[in-house]
Image (cartoon, rainbow, N blue to C red; front, side, top):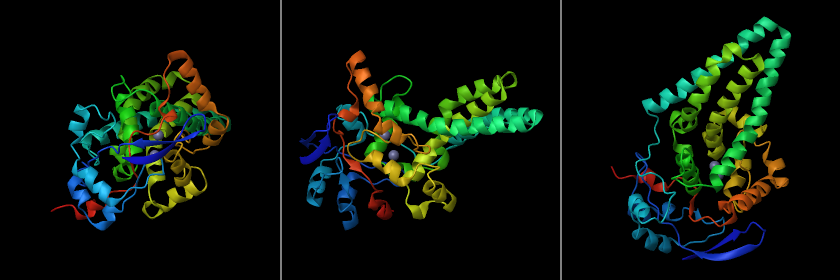
Length: 328
Ligand SMILES: [Zn+2]
Ligand SMILES: [Zn+2]
């Protein structure tokens, strides 16, 4: 049992005693058993596993807890966590991942191509219109990711129809933020490009009847929403692992920065939901926009958001060191 500190929605800090969630790394080829991790090199024992950024634990406690570790499936079967990541989770891109990603991109590209043809016909007015539409999509996509991210972080669970998988994925990400940095590109982004394929196809089918601004806006908005998953991954990576161009875009606040998104993973875990540019985080958080929405949801449904309560899980912030000493 450990002491954790969490923040209530009213801003009152409270202490509570929480049971650390039993976890076991199951990522192929990085996989390592809980026992191996517990008995691994000193660096693994010193790995920080924090609860609400304020948990202190001893390595001996980790050994005791992890020696009692059970598999994800047994945890699930006991109903102790709805958020544990699928034990068969794959971090590499498969042909299916690539097909969904590239297929959706092609559909979005088709609508944008139609917008370019329309802009050519209209001349300078057309190009201005196209540019404004893309700029609007960029600004509004950040807001869109914020509202969607807030909703899946706070409501429903892994069994929620249509978005259950995404809800579980976001909760899994909160438990182990480092996993997103280990995913290959299509493995990571296909989770969003796949559901976006249907609207992208619809937009393309109607593109010859749609105005220029709509073709440019809808395709770039959808594309940026999907790419936010990669912008998100970049915001978790070390500077040394990022391409120079991405670092510059983060430094100029054109893409969500590491510092800006890092705040989302720290107590009180109730803001900084936007993950394209992060421009909307300040206005939304400072205005109490999400607290207002949460109170409205509570008043109409009686459901409290998850962020009003302390996290149920320990947070594994870094890639477990034992991946370096994975048994041959
Ligand atoms: Zn989140
Ligand atoms: Zn994150």
